Amino acid sequence: MRIVLVTATELPIPEDVELPVLQAAAERAGLTADVACWDDPAVTWGDFDLALIRSTWNYPSHLERFLAWADATAAVTRLVNGPGIVHWNSEKTYLGDLLAAGVPTVPTTYLAPGEPVALPGYGDFVVKPTVGSGARMARRFRGGTLSAAPAHVEWLHAEGNTAMVQPFQHRVETDGERALVYFGGEFSHSIVKGAVLSAVTGVRGEHAHPDVQSYEPTAAEHAVAQAVLAAAPETPVYGRIDLVLDDAGSPIVMEAELIEPHLFLGSAPGADDRLLGVIKDLLGR
Image 1: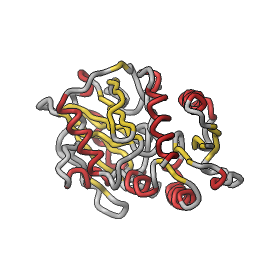
Image 2 (image 1 turned 30 degrees about the vertical axis):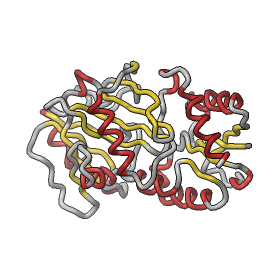
Image 3 (image 1 turned 135 degrees about the vertical axis):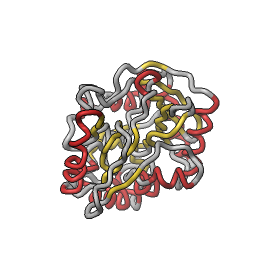
């Protein structure tokens, strides 16, 4: 069986440190794993038995093209995760779906281009686009920077983005952000990491995942993450559910990463083999 790990032409392949890890795990599973870019028109996706989306990290800048690629690829091979999940998870308006399903999430207000720039009265919030990854174009506003928030929203609108506004969750600075990883609907491992947005500059620092440590989730955190998976259009083959604690100490969803998340394989011995085991099972069905 031949699978392909999907990355992007605009990124140097070594930037995704998990690609070679997964290639080695595929070999141990008796599979051949190539690497190809979703935005390379020379790739014949039907040549592969399965396409595993990994580091397609440039898709926010090419959303319509990426969604069309997902649909076309799923028509000629098995795409993981599938196009239904890709469409649903590609815009962070899915947080509204989770809230409607009773899943506790970070409160979110959406401001589409052309709508009035109405910002909250509280003094520490985050503005980011609904299509984005790795805190790119996200900014935290507090204190003396609050007056700059409308301009940031207007800039996002000028770039064609819907802006989303969320109250900053202060406990992330002391308790961190939890990332729970699931393969085939089953819990694999989790980590906790530091706050991504700086309290000083309001923007992402040098690292998208600072101060990563292994972490054992609580029963409440497991329950919230499982509720996210249940609310998705279908059970994702892989998924990373990012949680923070609200002011009362209860876990709430920051994001559900179901398209191209870093899976922190280096923090969990055997996680790479667990994922490829799920992939091999899919190919045997």
